[in-house]
Each structure stands twice: as structure tokens, then as C-alpha cells.
Length: 256
Image 1 (cartoon, rainbow, N blue to C red):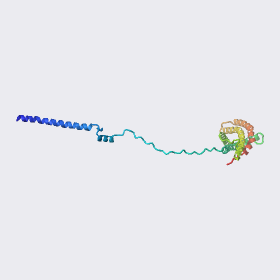
Image 2: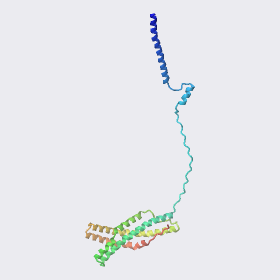
Image 3: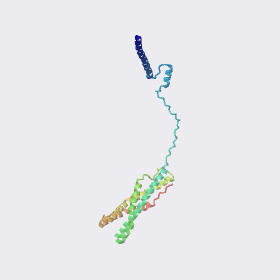
Image 4: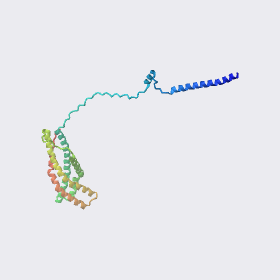
């Protein structure tokens, strides 16, 4: 009886050990199945499933957008400007500036001419010094502004690129009008050339007078400077006055 009990006591632990080993082996097998790769194993169903779920690695070609063929835009034919019409416009602009310079010169040098004549009468004892001093202010009113205006318009005229000219072969009323205007402009150009020379002593004399009034010159120095400019005026103004009227009557009539 004691031997049988000892045998049972040994048998129970052995059975428990075997059972534990079996459970442990099953767990290892289950874990291995869970950790193995999901790649298809070769069965038709597995391969089909793997193919359906496998990501696509090849790039899908993009479809080029289809564009409708466009027709080339039709360009308007280039139309060359009429050279005579262009000359008329150019001539009109040039004449406007030249006329302004002519008027400014006429006004400024008219004052200078009267200023010189008063001195001439004084030196010829036709008037007294008091009368000369009373007459001179009228000849210097805004004189500096008038000289500056001439300088500005004459400079603008010289810088202008527009010219009054047409080709020798051009014909018609417009071309003839441009040629007549070009002749008038040449006359005025000659007048302006004389005006630039004649106005220079007057411009300096006006500055000297302002300098004297501000106390920058003594009476003796101012009188000496005045006599120099007076003589220069007598030498240069006649050249201008001899042709000034030609410039004033010169005309430029252009078609609209």
C-alpha cells in the first residue's frame, strides 16, 4: 500500500510537467505564427490575397493634357507714316518754340535799345541827368525776367530734335507749306543769332545794377562798368535791329 502511494505521488508531478511542456509548446507555436511574415505561402488563396493587398511600386504614368491646336494670330500689316505728315508735325513744334524765342528777344532787346538811347541823349546834352534817371526805370522793369525768358526758350529751341524739312522729291500743298515754313525759320534763326550777341551786355549790365543796389559796387565802379556796357551795346544792338523786323514778319502756315 505504501509503495502504491509513493508511485502515485511521483506520477502526479510528472503529469503536471508534461502538461506544462505541452502548453508552453503550443504558445510558442502560436506566437511564431503571429510573428511570421504576411507574404503569401504559395496557396492559391494566399497568393491571390497577397496580390490584392500588395502596394503598387511602379509609378503611374501621367497623362499629357490635350491641347487644341491654336491658330497663329494674324498681325496687321505695318503702315509706314507719311513723311510729309510727319514733317508738318515736326515743323509745327519747332516753329512754336522758335516764335517764343523770337518774341522774348524782341521784348528784352527793345528795353535795352531804349535804355541805350537815353544814354545817347544824355551824352549829346539833349536831356539832363535828372531826366535820364527818371526815364531809365521804365526800360528796366522786369528786364531780368525778360532776358531769362529768352535764354530759356532759346535753349529749348536749340535742344529740340524736330526739324522743318521734307525730301526734295515730295510734292503737294503740304510739302510746299513745309518748305515755306523752313525758309521762315531760317530767317528767324539769323535774327536769334544776332539777338544772342546783343543781349549779352544787357544781361551783365542788369546784374551790375542789382549788385550796385545791394551795396556790392561803389558808384564810381558802377558808372565805369555802365559805360563799358553802353559802348558794347552800341556795337551789337544795331546788328540785331537791322534784321529784327524780318524775323517779326516771318510766318509759318501749315495745314491742320
